[in-house]
Image (cartoon, rainbow, N blue to C red; front, top):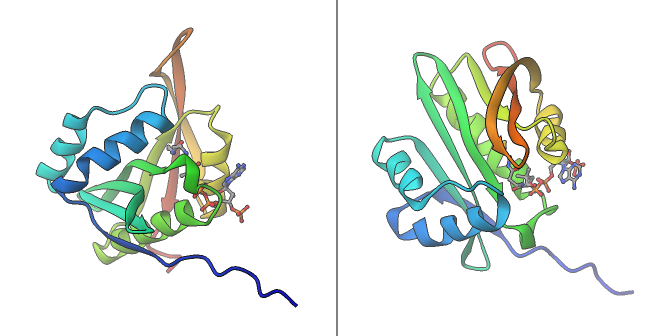
Length: 158
Ligand SMILES: CC(C)(COP(=O)(O)OP(=O)(O)OC[C@H]1O[C@@H](n2cnc3c(N)ncnc32)[C@H](O)[C@@H]1OP(=O)(O)O)[C@@H](O)C(=O)NCCC(=O)NCCS
């Protein structure tokens, strides 16, 4: 009998300025309208919770969370296209939720394109639900695209 191949270990750690090049590269290959290098730098300088997931000794994904006044916003969550469907997006999101709970966050919000069914499936799986629609929030080929606003309450479900 052939033993199944074990997944190489992956680990999550805080993002550093040295990660910026790798993170920006994944960002450019993942989004039609990617964040610039400067936006990531500003997130680090602003003290947002910026994390990366390492696999095979390289950055394979990242997440960015801002926390203020008992609320948190997931500003970015992304996995390198070549490492998707290995559970890494969910691991990054679990870490984000852990950090939000540790900071006594009551509600965690995010915006996502309604066309992004993969991300919506992930967020729904983790207990988020749509609460509203932000009209013309995103750049899009045909003008602008709305954003779906999602929330998850953290206080009573831990
Ligand atoms: C969304 C994203 C982070 C998911 O990362 P991932 O590592 O591929 O996801 P995981 O392997 O952890 O999958 C977790 C869950 O996500 C959903 N999911 C993942 N890939 C999916 C796909 N191709 N189709 C539908 N649902 C999918 C499923 O609910 C899955 O749970 P399951 O395996 O029990 O079915 C990744 O697709 C990505 O980086 N996309 C581009 C950036 C982006 O859109 N970010 C979100 C912005 S708000």
